Image (cartoon, rainbow, N blue to C red):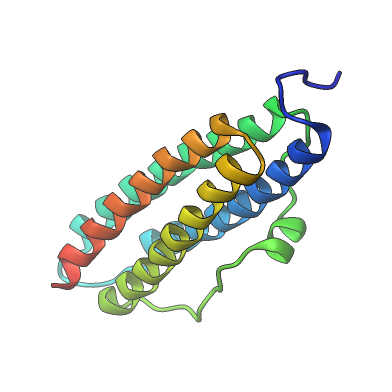
Length: 156
């Protein structure tokens, strides 16, 4: 059954495309953070293990919120890894177990998402007239800003 929530079918489809692209980005960032959680080595292993765990748990919640919003709009949330990798805007670097490299990679991704989400919010609210999705992305933007700040604090 199609959703009748005051967003045209054309706009709803465009919103879902934006959200599914962000969903793909969040999945890549989640797996990168989880990878670093598993593969970090260093004298502060326990601290970093817990730090990464807190970050990927927050990303998992974000992933779920985005996917549910796509479903609220009456579309399918992208969930196959093959499809996610085709539309993500993030890259996967080589394996590293060095804290500085890991944190720099994560910071770059968070800042990329922050810049992208800002643009998406404008498009969602102004062009596509979906304040609900724009509001969701505003909250996600704040989460990425906080996560980036925490990572920057480690980098000094």
